[in-house]
Image 1 (cartoon, helix red, strand yellow):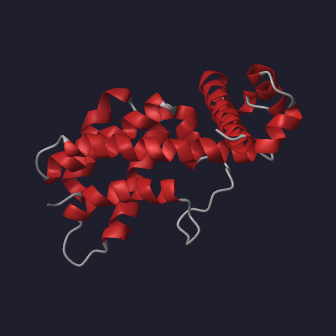
Image 2 (cartoon, rainbow, N blue to C red):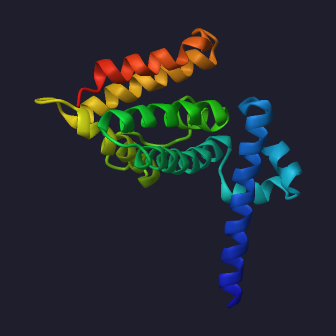
Length: 192
């Protein structure tokens, strides 16, 4: 291995460490606890080293969001591939999405609530974000209904899931009604 390859590998490892540490800190204490000073202390590198990877917290949030998008896409695809029939796949998608939001609140916030400097729904949208949307579209495109644009339907269904996730996390919805909400969403919107 050349010196340059070793340095690139070490740089990539430091970057993974920064992102993993930021994510862990955010999951434990919230995003307000994630500061470059605190991250530098936790990873035992100086702040200038941290800044050589990320210009600041916004870029770190973006990196966590990209990682989370890949994980969300995988979770949705895994759940839907195990389901039999269009309705069951849509229900599995909804459950996987909502479960992801509950299990990874800081990552969910990085993806959908915080400014991470990422372009959404544009030509220059990063591939992991496009793939997460594609994971939803793959299943929801099956149940769109005649004369309805599959992409538009996916956006509306996603917005409903996001609303449920956000309102549930904020304690605005009764937790015991979580399953009936999903059933209602699937039955009313996803006509196969």
